[in-house]
Length: 343
Image 1 (tube, one colour):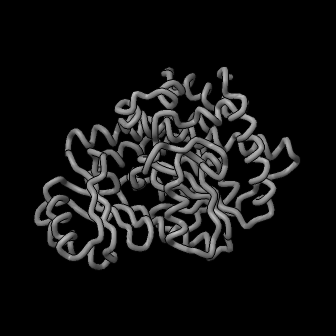
Image 2 (image 1 turned 180 degrees about the vertical axis):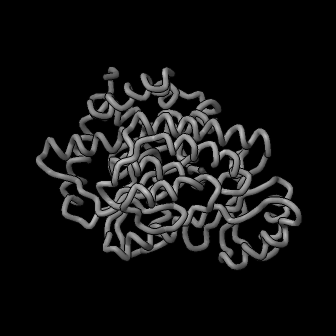
């Protein structure tokens, strides 16, 4: 444990204990963030607070044979933001947070039993670990490979992503159709009502951004990512990743996992393999995923991982549910606004 961090550690333990008391009997879902939630310093506080979390960080360093823990805690930011590093780093911090919550629950004689789990893009693989479909080392290796393949795809066919706020989906589809011409462009993420992300080749993307502004979008912002995630530009990477997934051992989920593509609960290995086969080239239906969980009776969402982007999106989907993010759990909070989830 790092010197001088004992007050933070005990504060986190106290907050976790209170949160566990408040939510243990709730109709609960756990959700896990994707790329874009990373920041230098993430995971340090929960590492100091929890022996179970420390074991996860140590395991990640060992499996990848790289000082991933130091990169999470210290950066540098450009290296951490590289998709090859960001993806396993976010997975590790999220699973460390989950381990800490479970550790504290066991110590207080409680059981945290979510009705469902889900994750945004990369976070879907974290959710599969939470549902015991994948063990952590297997997921870590797959996510590292996912990041490598996506980065290579971006180098071979450069692209980008942009958030569009204030246009409905039908309007944005028309914008993409007009801007696409002979290029690749489409909706990548349906994050919440009024917040969509488009993805594709750079020239059509820039045309679409201008057209969206002309159509009255409240905000159009290019995301800080040089790959066109969740678009056909990822087709070759998706095929190579699918081959790796086919080699992996998947177990039946212990709790339903809501899929990004379908927005529906997955309860069999066959469902999950079908979802993952096109995981990085098909759009993320986060709005539909959250609505599926609400329709199933979920009343409380706990976001486990760096930042609290998903908690904010969920509140925009339904004001009737409760959300808990990193701040509510006493975990690490980033400095300033975080980018929208991308990959």
